[in-house]
Image (spheres, rainbow, N blue to C red):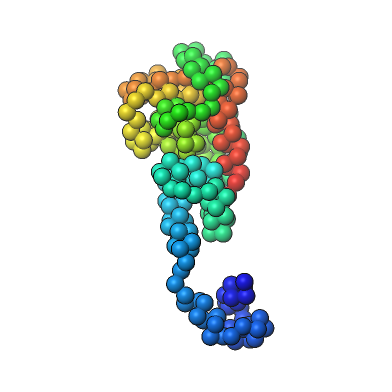
Length: 239
């Protein structure tokens, strides 16, 4: 649209000559510029505010797929591509990451829970099945470890924590945030790999205290936690 082109270039060129170039009346341009926003524009502004809130709440680790899932879970009717477009046009970016693998099951003697999910990467309701994993991402403070808890129903991040060292408190903090945000009332299955951080006695006690049932992947089998693998592959590469 000619008026939009003039608006985009108005910081570099005078309005009058551009109106002459595009053969539009100057009064028409100013009338367009000061028109009341359309219903679509108002809806986009509201949606953008919600996108920024979710993006800030998870410290920039969610891409448009998970933000779409979270907003849908909150009752917002919006399309994934619309969210992606708003994020792209407003410079809302996802933190870059580098995949990192926790300690495998064969490298510790801690008790391991059975695999209760059996590769079922879906759920019928919120707060029914959660999955968790860790990765390594680049931030303004350098490379940091990141622990994430994902709800398999909404595909939204419900808990996260970051630290420059791989400490036991990292997975504790992510789980504590998930419980505080979602306040699950029924039984929740939390699936993870069998790394020492997830099998530690303190972490298992935390799960039990909140009524959460642990589930662990088989040794060396990343596909048992395919939902987290998919999240790290896709949502950290989109914007």
